[in-house]
Figure 1 (cartoon, rainbow, N blue to C red):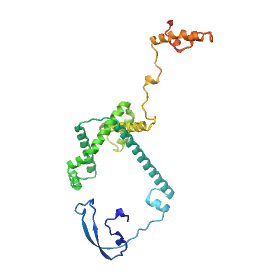
Figure 2: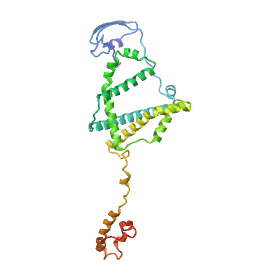
Figure 3: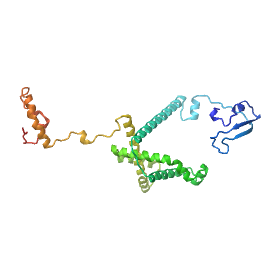
Figure 4: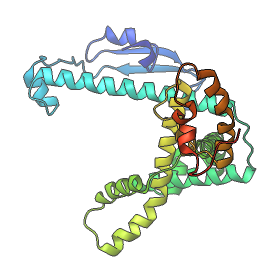
Length: 300
């Protein structure tokens, strides 16, 4: 038993005892003990060892792998464990990266919001908690009694988290707007279809009702995910998620007749400089001359 797992400071005495033996000991509960009636108190304990058991570990083999998993061999089980550890480490790395990117965004932003917005976020978090509790078959009032909290106390506890969530949502929303990020309808439809599969076969009317109910949240979640990916990439200096340049910047712009005429004004000077090197007029070789409207003569 490790020191942090010891319920009382007399484990050494217990380890030396045999079944049927009795002993007494004094102990002090720490001030931070979860049971307030015992926190910081001195107690005198009398105890009797009812029995001594030893944990026997099974042999590490293919048979063990079959017993404790869906794998047939020990090597398969080990590889599965390695893969799971790698996935957990990768998820933790991405989470740290995301938190750092969000912090960088918020630190460089000026965000203002009314108190009512925080209240609404608290209300939403309370509703989510109520749904979670009721999903386990518990009554909300009974849950509050079990946690020894009133709803107002719970609201006060979650308010800092609600405010943090609100700030993040506002910052990400503005970031997505400025970066021109959006979600394709096909992306939303695919995710909605995946969610509806979990409800099994339903009538077409029910399917459409469910689709209409979940689509807004799916669209928001998808945009939020894409925005976070874009933000993380931008903070890390990567380019794969950066918004594309406007089409008018990427494509060559067509010159107006005035611009073509101005360009043609400069051609005689270039032609004079190159006259000794080429007998053909230089102006005929330039894109500007080819682009000039038919019948229009360059102005000298």
